[in-house]
Image (cartoon, rainbow, N blue to C red):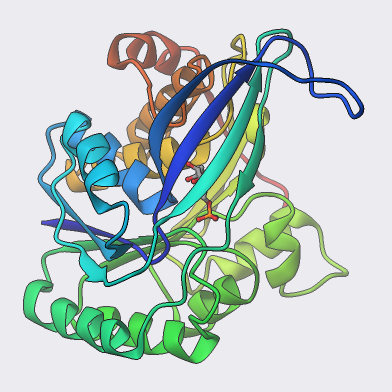
Length: 310
Ligand code: TA6
């Protein structure tokens, strides 16, 4: 079983505007759509699309629970959330201009998790997760979820002996690296925070970090990524596509990568699949849609080169 943990889920409100946003102008909204948000939920959505059994865990607010659950059921995302009474799951505003590519993302902070729910989550992990499982912890934790809380959660997950993937940033990424996990996916800015030796090159640092992390991905947005595994570093060059909305592309990569691990595919195949899926995602307007057909075609346009210089 694969469990995704989204500590701070979101409902994405997609605001479509005609032109790029400008100050002192009425930036009229042409249409508005809803999508699920919070990185773990996107990972779950990708796994479900690959027909891989998974369950989304985390803490949602009672106030708009029905709205979130209806989006999740559309995306066939099975879940067993803890519910916090009187709280509202955050909104993440995503502005997409029809004129240009890319998006502007403005996530709310989210509600503080109650101490009772922090404990309940640990208990849920102890009851559900076994050594054969994969756990993906993804997205920014809520405001009062301290580094110590995060460390406690990670230790509880690790204690089960399962495969642990962690897509977090900043100080939480530090904790993940320090405690040791099986997978991380910082981007080129996030990795700056965890460089082992700042006098060395990025590739040398990737190699050093990868000594404690089974699969280390450094995403380079539209340029592709690096992957370090078993003492080797690969440069993955992504196909060039017409970008509509990059929001969720990284989550799509993580979901497809974990799907490949679960399917026990060879690493090069996993990387091609994940890169193809995220390239397809970028071509779609919402936060989570990608096409399996497009991904299959794009996969064949992915180039993987082993990096020799170390
Ligand atoms: O990566 C995309 C996304 O999951 C959006 O759908 C949005 O809700 C946001 O990221 C949340 O990110 P955060 O890091 O705040 O958990």
